[in-house]
Image 1 (spheres, rainbow, N blue to C red):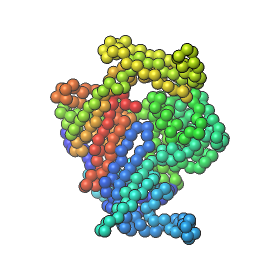
Image 2: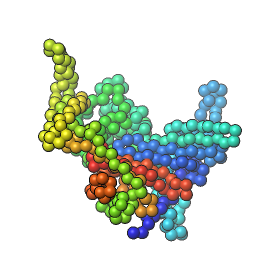
Image 3: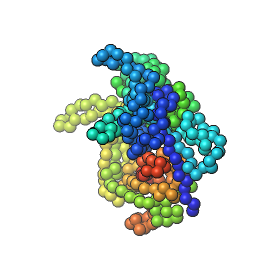
Image 4: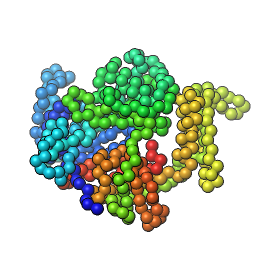
Length: 413
């Protein structure tokens, strides 16, 4: 099997609209971006604080509250800067005309990998050096600071939805864009195919937290695809019933086949097993009868798996979904719990061989399912497919893209 191609990485500092300010590729170090399904994505790296690409005064300004004078922001600033990462095949033929929209490099074309907001800066200097640690988040983090609104911008009111889950999620983002201001996320052109109906209420709640709650129900996935623009739009929202695809050619094998795994670890534990459960929903109205306090939930759904009970003894759980006021939906969620929690959960952590492994985002990505193989040398063989719900992405010392870890599970969230 031929070695996998290596990808160059380019790091561009931009303003809040996405227009380039400076190129950080050669001065950034320890670049690391952990990606996790259905959560805000982050990026960290370090740069020399005294480099002109970092500390030169930019054209945008602010009024210093202490002196009242107008001060120019440095190139690298928190809150009003974005970081765009581009990648290209390092082995591509030099001289190929560029077709990408990236502002730097054209032979061969750079393509956008992901976009983050600069959220936190930590400056540290000693007698010899000054270093700034940069922490970035994607625009989901903005949604964590946007209130849930309905069809009108009415703060302090209960926001109520009874609709398809994709319409609920889309409506929350659209309302924030319309009534508060741009979030950097557009719903235009997104895919919305999560049809499960939900009935939810939000009191003084935030959009990002609400999206995470909806994904925690197991009925949808949230996707933010990067948009390489200079108009302040950085991501396109999609709400999928189940995101990702089966990638049969993205094979990860430890001691078999292409040996694309350098190291593998597997954890199986009983902590999540629940083969008898009562899931509660609706309104809780406590009442006291003798020495028993009854919570008085208006909805309840029960599941039981007798095979699992015979194998592991009876293990119970009593999850509460108090935002669910529809019995059919509660029953659906209980059935999903029964399927997911009948057996011990298995988590695989894979360290890919960079010369043999499939190419991230080209051949597989978050939410996709991939074949994973290991022989009985790992106590119990692994022969099947697992869903990717996390990976640690970064750049190695030679400037090439590196995936240092992939986290998969047969029953991943």
